Length: 481
Ligand SMILES: NC(=O)c1ccc[n+]([C@@H]2O[C@H](COP(=O)([O-])OP(=O)(O)OC[C@H]3O[C@@H](n4cnc5c(N)ncnc54)[C@H](O)[C@@H]3O)[C@@H](O)[C@H]2O)c1
Ligand SMILES: O=c1ccn([C@@H]2O[C@H](COP(=O)(O)OP(=O)(O)O[C@H]3O[C@H](CO)[C@@H](O)[C@H](O)[C@H]3O)[C@@H](O)[C@H]2O)c(=O)[nH]1
Image (cartoon, rainbow, N blue to C red; front, side):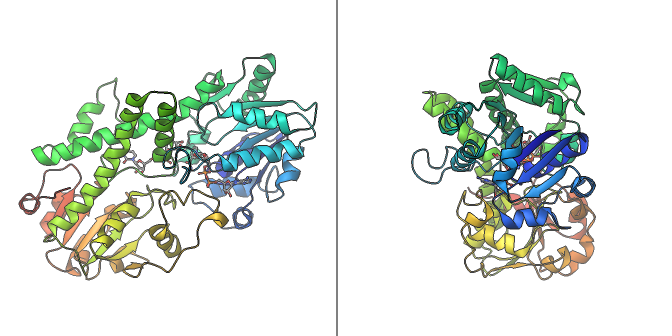
């Protein structure tokens, strides 16, 4: 029986290994982590992450050929294939601070693998890492291990998106495996291919050299984020000209060379990956003497920041240039629907912007609890991307923020509503009832284009929707960024 161990029981390690266990009955999978609460949660009825479809798989496989454990060394020692899916945060200090990837967790995992291994192993980079990381890992492994042990390094980046992780893992567009172009490297690629081939069609499994695989992951995220920044840049031009960004996206996406996905204008992209990976790419370009290329990708982040600032300015400007002391309801805090993940969610920057203007916020998200929101609003940039027990403790909660259990409580007596996540339930709220219980004039700022703006205008709301023709009210109160 092939034994797989995955170091890192997070958003990637957990679902990915659960699907491998489900699809490969002859493989034994152990997911290990240094975080005791995380492993305890994986072994309970309340998984540490919310992902549609995940619970059913864990229920079926846990205790059969899927195990969650804090005994990292034992499971690594026993494994034939070791996946490493630990955090690779953006560095906050020292060389490359604010851009470069911090490989502390990766390096400590690699040193531990070298220390405890007594047999040959395939070590798989699952985390997103800078191109050429495999070379560094190879050196750590070969210089620190007992003589005679053969390590083969593979790069097998993960392309799942949160909220759809299980479908993405069941039917991936591709599985990418990079390895050394040596007989040993090719044999390792084949061994990993054999695992995926149990459910992924062979023509979707791509084998490349190590550096292509590592770089393809950064490139894919940069391309995806660039599409969003492109449509968001267009959204501001739409507002200035009277064009409708949904119509523009539709028309542009009909071109068979462009295609329709990832062209939804929004208050900005969030999530743990896009910003981090593009900053990483920018740093790599700079280190390779390519400042023009670095500048090109930096612009994707700049437009994303601009979009969030622009949204806050629009809210404040429309409400007579001040939100001081006014109750503003925030509907949605997660970075996208169908996840409870708040890492780099645009809601953090929007809320901080409104709090900076002294608004009182009442926040509702179906999957995010008060503790998480208070931590997020108190945390410094990039501090979130560390194992839980190493994150700074949440200082006292932000006083002007309350977190409530439903949209109607959030909006009661509010002057304005900001929709920041596209949860389906926001489409079918009783907006008549909401309007009746709000201060007048009542504003809705739709950062996700989920509501029917015309219907809301009929009720009496003043509506702002990203990239859509502006109400007369908004035209008269232009936002200056
Ligand atoms: N979240 C996504 O959708 C996604 C998708 C593709 C790739 N990635 C990449 O995958 C990697 C992991 O991301 P994630 O979202 O799963 O992160 P995560 O924070 O959810 O999980 C990482 C886990 O690794 C554990 N860990 C850190 N160092 C460890 C060590 N030395 N030994 C044992 N456990 C250790 C942490 O405690 C944590 O539970 C990152 O590089 C990320 O960029 C993420
Ligand atoms: O048209 C769109 C599509 C997405 N978004 C936003 O973009 C962010 C990221 O969304 P998405 O890419 O769906 O989720 P992630 O889980 O961040 O997945 C991305 O990042 C992962 C981590 O690297 C990759 O594995 C995935 O392929 C890549 O899609 C979210 O805030 C979305 O709301 C938009 O604003 N407009």
